Image (cartoon, rainbow over all chains, first blue to last red; front, side):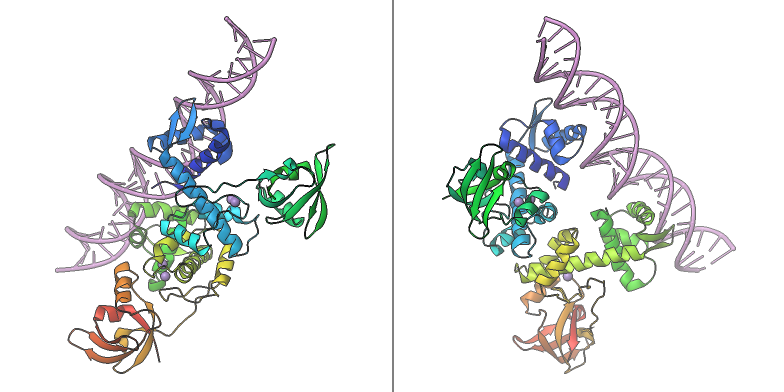
Length: 219
Length: 219
DNA sequence: ACATATTTTTAGATTGGTCTAAAAATATGT
DNA sequence: ACATATTTTTAGACCAATCTAAAAATATGT
Ligand SMILES: [Mn+2]
Ligand SMILES: [Mn+2]
Ligand SMILES: [Mn+2]
Ligand SMILES: [Mn+2]
């Protein structure tokens, strides 16, 4: 049986593989799982020995099919639990992640399937991240950061790039939550800030940082 | 932070303390948590060092207030999760225990409170075992095994003494589930078996073993 | 009471997961 | 190309949790 620690490493490697396509290097993993690089090397040997990753000294690691499947299952479980916490227990979107970090390690295929059904087979979690299906397939969606929108374009907020508590609480505070329809009124080249119009809460100025971390679906 | 292993030991000690009132001895714990006696001795030292139990060499162990509280919280979580799995996800009463064994270790006071609310503050789990409230108080209930009922007495099945999968499946098969009203028609002194009448499924003969492991609330 | 049986503890080893400090390999800049 | 910086691995140690085998303490029976 795979341990929670091993699972966390696989998830970290998966996450880091997503954006680079390159083998994932030791330091990156160390940073992601919050350990010393030496510990990562030890774990890499173990994961390789058990067939979860391909590892060559000094060359970084990649997931095997087996490791990839486990990582996707973890993400599926994590995001389904987030939906449960959000939809059924009314936790806020800045609270769900920490609890889901624990719940994602519960081992029961049947439980996952039934949760999925109970929740109505959701395709996205409370942060707008896609939930892979039983086969590990992620729903693709046309989305771009608000910062890439042109003047007078409209769209609906569908996700966040940054997942930090402060950012999520900030968004909540200013009613910039998932499902909010916005229109770009003005773009200030000086500092990249933007004036936007929301249906329910009027005009707002958002900084470039915010605009860059909020995804919209155009139209 | 207390580990899952330590939690399991505390739960085992609590369970064993319930029936004996005496300090719990090493072998009993070893049997309960499925380890070697030597491992229990090691763990006893650690749990004592951390203030969860009182331990004196060769004298057995008792829970401290701190240890007792943790054990009760574990039982509360375990049984609430069982209710969730049974009520909301339609697992059967022989399936819920194994998954709850994992879920009971999730650390979040808030989660427990909200689950409790979602489930309607249940007082008993799917096996009829009492769920302690937030303060650790168990609901008391008048109950006795069917084997102690007199002829022509009536009652409602409210719990099981044995929790094994085979027994639970056996009961399901013969419709002897919680809430079933029964009347004792005849008692066979020869082997302790009994003839009972159920409202929905007619007359049945049950063995002494079954009669002894099924609790009813009289009236 | 004393020999025997049972229970419990200790001794010593193993495995998973972690660390720091030092060594080795790789990358980078002029 | 070579010195320097960075990254990665190794070496050696530690802690939690476990085991088996042997020793010590306690319980039991006649
Ligand atoms: Mn999350
Ligand atoms: Mn999420
Ligand atoms: Mn149970
Ligand atoms: Mn139960």
